[in-house]
Amino acid sequence: MKDIIKWYDNLPWIVKLIFALPGLDGILWGIYRLIKGLHKNDIGLIVAGIVWIFAGIFILWLVDLITVIMYNKVTVLA
Image (cartoon, rainbow, N blue to C red; front, side):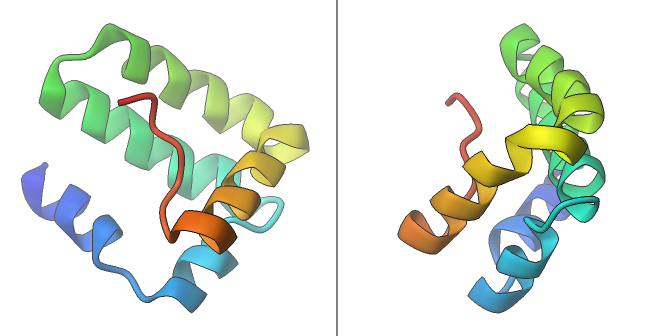
């Protein structure tokens, strides 16, 4: 799991931006949050990952798009 988290964190900015687009965001960044939550044993992050998988496709992608543009990372609650 640690390798997957590191891979996501080290992606180039443009790839993170593409992953934050509608449709891809819910699946890719939702799974990232879920894996990171499982690795850290953080219930809040696990719940956020599950919610992001379903709601990220519709509206939450905007949050990720903005945070990737401004901070080069997605919001992960921790």
